[in-house]
Length: 120
Image 1: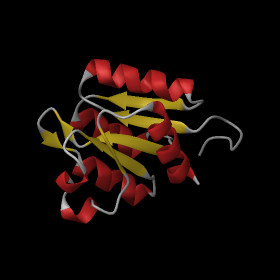
Image 2: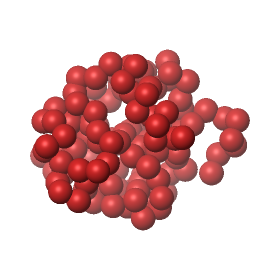
Image 3: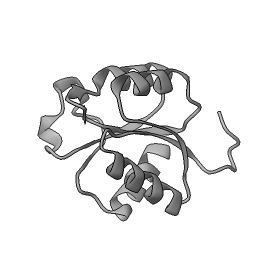
């Protein structure tokens, strides 16, 4: 894992390019480092299995595919994550409903507090 004094490293999975760029900018503005960014389940799976990160932000629906296989990889590694979705918390599959989630669109302050809780 990275140096404890370094900025926390966040993995970002979002298939909409402009939203992914906005999210990356938001993270940088909040003092985080982007450990990696993916726009497909295949890219996300590879990064989830190998990237040195403190936590991840996972879009629930990535190009029409559910993000849960990526969430499972992160969970097995002990990497916390937050789901983001435009469909609301009730749209999460049953085994994942206890995980933190953000409703799109969200503000930087909501992201900041959610990540602070994940990293605490």
